[in-house]
Amino acid sequence: MKIDNSTIQKLAHLSRLEFDAQGVEKMKADLSQILDWMEQLNEVDTEGVEPLTTMSTEVNVLREDVLGEHLPHEDGLKNAPQRDSDYFRVPKVLE
Amino acid sequence: MERLLQEDAIIIGRLNCDEFGMGSSNENSVHGKVLNAADESRVPGGSSGGSAVAVQANLCTVSLGTDTGGSVRQPAAFTGIVGIKPTYSRVSRWGLIAYASSFDTIGIFSREVSDNALVMEIIAGHDKQDSTASRKMVPAYSTLLHFEKRARVAYLKESIDSPALQPEIKENTLQVLEKLKAEGHTVEEVQFPLLKYVLPTYYILTTAEASSNLSRFDGVKYGYRSPHAHNLESMYKLTRSEGFGEEVKRRIMLGTFVLSASYYDAYFTKAQKVRKLIRDFTEDLLNKYDYIVLPTTPSTAFKFGEHSGDPVAMYLEDLFTVPASVSGVPAISIPNGKDAQGLPIGLQIMANAFKEAELYAFAAYVLKLNP
Image (tube, rainbow over the protein chains, first blue to last red):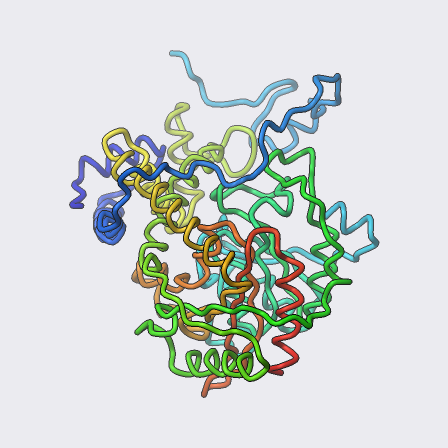
């Protein structure tokens, strides 16, 4: 799979990442190489095979809906890079 | 941790690993790289390299690590100690930062199989904080280490014949198989034609899961936040671009690619189908045989920088550990001698899901047979 600049830019935006010109070139080369290698899977016949979507053997893990302790407000804010008294602070969202 | 503390375990420290468990050499850590105590110019393996060397260098009796594709077994092999990856869902992952949720397990490093088994019986079992954790009963592994049956053992032709396999590792692996035969166990060569597809399957699925799991690192609630942002979107992008290392970014980009609408079926769904074939094949094999024996790694500990320019070469280091991860079955690495340079060699034993007791007992037996 040949990856071009616009694909890298699109993937970077979806991943919320940014790359400089040199980083784009490196990522383009690496992704092309790795995807070529991944495409070996096309050699495997998977006609009629159901995809395996879960590994846990547990089914319907349910619990009673009971009143319980939540994370205390202050603990929830403890690791915040920026906060005020009650909230996580982020840069301005609305103009 | 809570369960260990309740048993009066003494917790003495936290250990280095590759960033988010992504790496086979410990070269992807912001804290610097861990050196292999057998040869300081060589990698300890990864991702849980710090945990392996802590036991190797006698800094502690037992350490915990995470094993998504071999991150406990490969460093255990590189440092000459015992390392287990339990069955998927055997140990709760509450408190663990998720990398690839359908693969992640907590593993244990130790010198002795008996110490390893003892810690496993404490930490395994149901946890209401992790709905994927199995409710199956946990046997008292440390009391079940006695082994006296005749085992049916399979070894994989593709692993022994792999051109990437270092000759001394091949020789030591075959020697163990010979000793087992001499003791009256059934030892047979089997073919595992899907082996070459195990790694691409693993990397498609784990990068997809990682790209999703790591989206939580956005600089809002915890962790690093870039000081250079001028609006919300640039805060996300700068925080993640400055905070993540190169390997992590590469895997997020790959995961985003294989999950994108136009390629989802061709890559992600395809890999889930191949995973089904690999798991079914492995489980069938482990119904016919009690154990699969194979080398833990194709080579002994490599030098720092040896593979850092080529991501695919680095991924190939995990060739023999990833099959158990893709299939969700338990596997243990035990010491199996040294190569010509005196570097430790690991032997890996796989068993069927939830057969940890049988795995520990057989591992202890093989270590006695092959000291």
